[in-house]
Image (cartoon, rainbow, N blue to C red; front, side):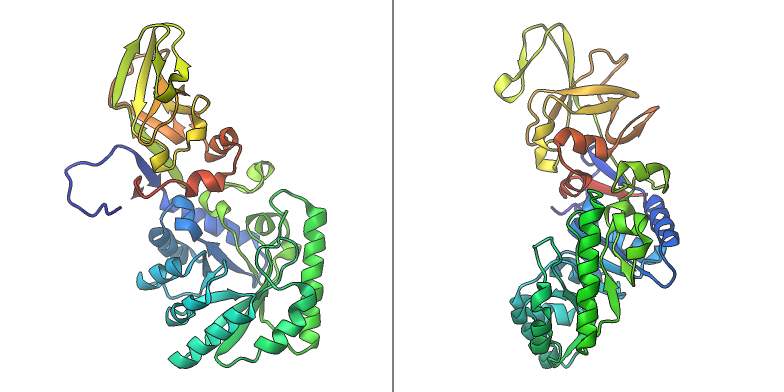
Length: 378
């Protein structure tokens, strides 16, 4: 949705993005990683809902060595916005995207012969050298060459014209769950596989295995580069790390009350009438719904902040509106600020709390917020 049109006012639902907090999070994480280890700032999926280009630029200003995205489109957008540091595509791409990968100077993850050959052909046609990283599957079983096939893979692809195999990496399946037995097993498999590749003459200057959890918790696995994602935006991969590393949430999601109604007992409200008032209740409407990424699963169990008090969500969240019960909050009027994620007075609702009510993770809460919600950068 294009918000560049000239309007005298906008929807009151806003995601405030604190660029200073983001910058400080990067600098804190950089201080915690090993010397000579690079930091790749993961800004995939619209920078976890915070905005690809503004966050990408701020990451560069904050000292990130590289950026990580999930698609060719995101990488191209960053390039066209003037960012010239290495940009890694952390997901697999299709062979017909190879020409764009090369044209925009993106670093592709490669784990198939078809893709390696397509990038090689595109690089040759464009008279360029394409930088690529080999991905090894150590247990996530999503993308990656299996360790027992990697030697044969490199024999067929390592020397293809136009390719520079700059790096080799893997993605752990259970590090965020703090399953260190599984993670250590996968790390050992990765290191053994890289050693076998080196013995066969297949060398890779940059080795990397971990995201936020590894960056904060396991310096023994930092290797040549770490790839923090959600930690950049102020959320620890494990709650117990909260007191060890001081991170600041970057997003505050807020809106305003646009309508208040006083309803008598036994009044069903919302689609399906699955909430029925039990007494005289004051019900307010907040202009956000699942069309903006505020998930319907929060119906009848989420909360928002009004005047520093918690107001529970009642009724079914619709595409564009959510009901909240403000009966016991004094002096509430239309136009009052509502905070969905963030601080208000002495109360706070974090994205982690929202994720808990959804039985999900912070990533879904933040990245699920759609472009309908205006971002304001502080």
